[in-house]
Amino acid sequence: MGTTTPKILIVEDAKNWAQTHKFMLGNHDITDIVAVDNVDTALKWMDENRGGIVLTDSLGNLWRDIIEKGKSLGMRTIVISAQSERNEPKFKEEVISLGGEFLSKTVFSNADLSGEAYKNLAESLKGNVGGSIEASGR
Image 1: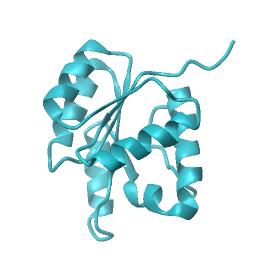
Image 2: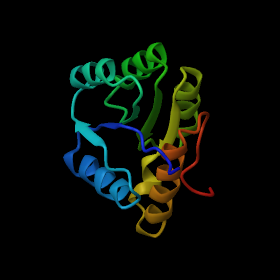
Image 3: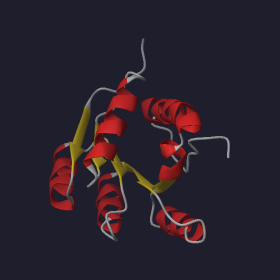
């Protein structure tokens, strides 16, 4: 029996990032993807698709609402965000402490690393592996 691919919600206010995530994950057989650009629509989708996985940008501080909703519904939530080198460790710690997972958007923007990063993310999504994941060997 093959691997089940989950429903994926991408919450990203930058259209180019949403399209890139969707395209690159599609290259790894993750095709049941919906992209939205606001938290209200995301929260509604989460209520309607309780078995799904959410990939969200930080959206200011609205990522907290998405993690909170995901936690209440038993959904896996991964924050993919670009933070300054100085702020990233603290941000990652906060995301994890609230029940989410963190991936640095900088890995996905580096042309040399992005293919491997998306491959690792897709494998993790297909396996629906819990806990913090890393998109690269860093």
